Amino acid sequence: TLLITVFFKASIYLYVAVIGLADLFKLNTYRQILFPIGIIVIFLSLTMASSFSEQGKEGFLYHYISIALLIVIPLLMLLVSLIRRRFKERLS
Image (cartoon, rainbow, N blue to C red; front, side):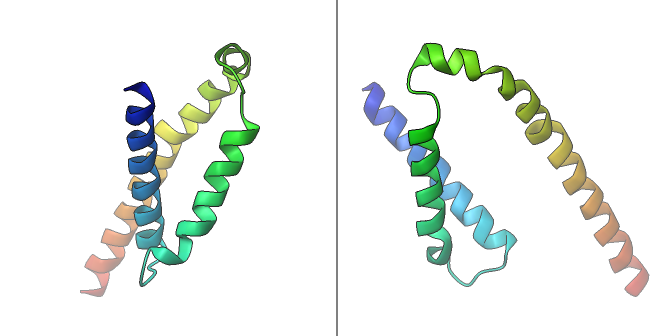
């Protein structure tokens, strides 16, 4: 059950990442970047921690990465959204 759950969770995350990147870069189809993103995911899964205890030792970087992913990037996206809205209002 655990393996099936992890497989479906990883598949959904990969699908959402590919769809999001295709939308971000305004690609016609997500299939153009599916293979490169899949290769990156496989490479990272093979090169990262090989066991849970090794992951705990390397986990200190997670705190710094999570600050960027959970705070900095959303704030930058909000700032870009506000700037775009202001330019649209001026042009209208």
